[in-house]
Image 1 (cartoon, rainbow, N blue to C red):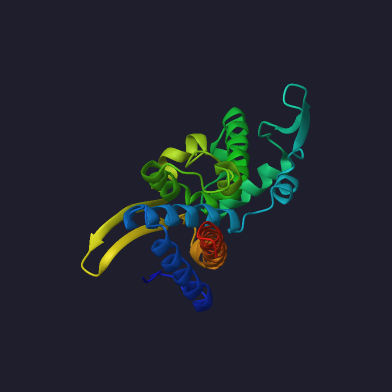
Image 2: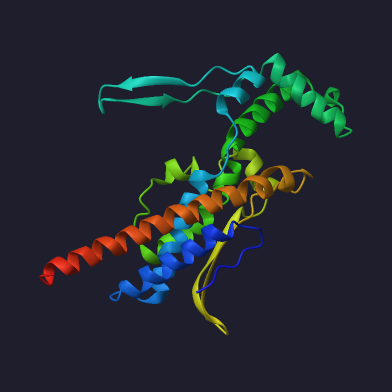
Length: 250
């Protein structure tokens, strides 16, 4: 087996993952290789999202003059839940947006008062939603492979991706970007069986979106995901070997 990537990954993490995958695949005799690598790739996508860097919600809210996240106790469930707060037009947010428009060669004065108020609120909502932008790039791959294997990854969708939908930026979603990621389930190739997962969460209008974003933080999250999944697979094999040994009277 081999792992190919268009970014440089720690070779030790890659080697350990390949060894663990080979051991796992050889021991799961009741499952096809198609199923096994689809399942493993799905789990890697989920854990890569979980370990990928995200911006600080608290810091962004402070910068934009938004209220801090509020938590409320639910008597029905007996747990604390986050209270959704609407984006607000504040002087801080308006000043940041105005500066960005001027830099792009657009005068904020082209908007009347009502239009400007709406645009600032939309800007705030979009910015706060962007904290999980890089993480959400793994969501299309996860959901596609989830349709194939129908099994949990040991982590919830919300915990892994910070969202349950591929794009939650409302009015900005339709025209802002294309797909943020993809997956090609296991298929026969000239060199053997292959599955592909991709994170494409790069802003085409931001020249540093790759170098300062996905290109910088994506490999770190992916390496941690490979390491995490390698441990999970190796642990499962050890447990099954112990179980078989006990059943065999050894």
